Image (cartoon, rainbow, N blue to C red):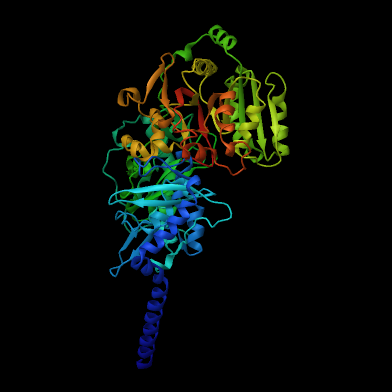
Length: 633
């Protein structure tokens, strides 16, 4: 016993000496910076002077938290591949600044001019660069400038034949005992789902608390037929399943379930309708969450996302601690209520009727007249060979809705073509569709594909869209929208017309996730997302009269300047000559872009390309819904 105590003391003494030596070794550069900050500043100033021509602001410094990208691609950066890979390599990117760990274990960060950053700035925050898409874009790096309460982000182009970034990254051991990636993943609520072993028991020691908030089930009255159907459903459960539900209650994870044609159908409701879940999804499946036991961990909860014709469900796991510190209102959906076993009933299908639009009641003669008057339009669709299932779902809606036959020319470009895709498209190359198909054995990327498609278009007006946008309006509305869109371009009222559905836009809509209920924050963060708010703000011209203008009344279209309306790869109508004159001929980067070139990031990150040009974007009721089965938001 005495020998073991002696060995233990020796071990911990050696561990202490090793830890102190190791920490001192890694803190030497930090202490040197604190003692002689001017040396680092002067060295980096000389580097910066060589980069003046390659230097630009992400956004005007008036918007210190500005984002250089289209929001549809910026969310992934928070814990993206770059974040994880570099932490695995033991490096943290402090964006040209420095962070110092004090004796009380607190960490304070400084910019390259040795100005102290706000208290919320940490090494991991700088490394993750939330909402700063350019910071992780190949060929760019970021630096920061700090004041007492603000952080200004700047993007720089990498100089060929020079190290990029021009500063060294910092070992994470300077600040943490363990690799912080795992801890960060937990704090962000990214909990790994675990499949239940076959021997798992639903039995629990104590019942889970029921939320007291009123639920639809608490408020509804149910018919005898509805109660009978629901009780028969409960009787079909196994003893273990029934005991679990009697203990925990039903949890539909933010979805709803009703009775349709004698079957239980679950769905996620939205303003434009209902997204139906796959057939295997029911109230039992949602409540048990067998593949996602983290959903019922202390301090955690789950919501689900469904999409029509998708055979899988998106599970979103959140922790209460993480949600408590999020600024984005939509980062965490409300905690779904739990419904007691004996009070849970399903009602008959009661999908609300859509409001009738004038185009919904147009006669066949009126539609034919509009089609005859419609100026020639070329539609260009971009897809890849392996995306056939997604394209097929969209094509079904374009055929049934009369979209393909309504336009004068329809071109589909297939990157990384496959034999299966070739065979599928063959029938559409015949009458009455007569589509044209361009194929490529490799992936050219979206920018070069856009040039190819418009370069082969025979019409002055070009509608670009990707494979995952389904038609959600009847032919009459589609023709009307196209007709007004052409008129807006021809009269030079607008330079671009967007056609993503206003109230059935699909998922994801990151502008809504981040800004709904705090819309005015967009002016200091990313002003060019403002136009997207019309998806949930009914009369934006009254709330922001200086930015939204009604530029067409029947049907309604709003016009917004490009400073407040981002470039998007969603369905857009533009003039082919306008594209080539204002972009391809004006920017070398767009002449022969690499496949990895990020068009949205370039257009929204380089002011003279889009934000500062004063272009006018028009948006109306729209007609296409985004349905990417791999990205349900």
